[in-house]
Length: 214
Ligand code: ADP
Image (cartoon, rainbow, N blue to C red):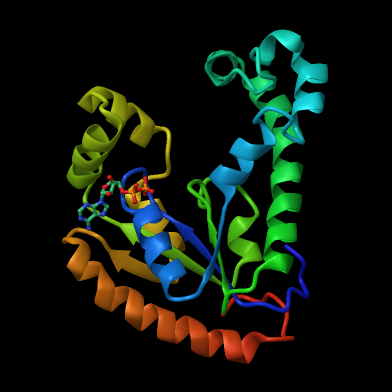
């Protein structure tokens, strides 16, 4: 993150299924600019994606599918069994994701910027580059139920993904703000409204102040 970023920024995170996308949409409806690092990673590895030439050079053409997109299943299998390959993949992707998020943030027209980063707590650097860390929190049993329903996965598969992420306690320890998403959608609205007001007030203060932690 540009340390002189003239915008107020929030890093939005949460465990799988806690409601990051749901909450991001509600902030977007109020005028925040959402920059989704998962979407950016996806577009970098789509056909003609900006990371594809480097990935093919590093891992070979067999890691691209017939359309020229990254063969995700093959890459997932490789990095699962090979920590060195994971580091090589990240060395290609992370700087490009960072650059693309910066470009998107510089072009954002919303009242402030929200970076939606699923692994914000796990991946070094993000906490220092945003003004506030917002964690979307819910019970682990709800995560399991929501992801089973959304992705049609078995309970064990959801739990395996959760085990690869930071624990609920670790995420909450990194949070400046927490949204409780244990209730229904109606229970989210007042929490979003309240935080949006706080963020608007911060964004008026921070213009031109740099990206210090608030
Ligand atoms: P994430 O982006 O953190 O993985 P999502 O926002 O996709 O989570 O939410 C996971 C699933 O649970 C989605 O199908 C979403 O529609 C649903 N969901 C999220 N929050 C609620 C809620 N408060 N009430 C009912 N369903 C919800």
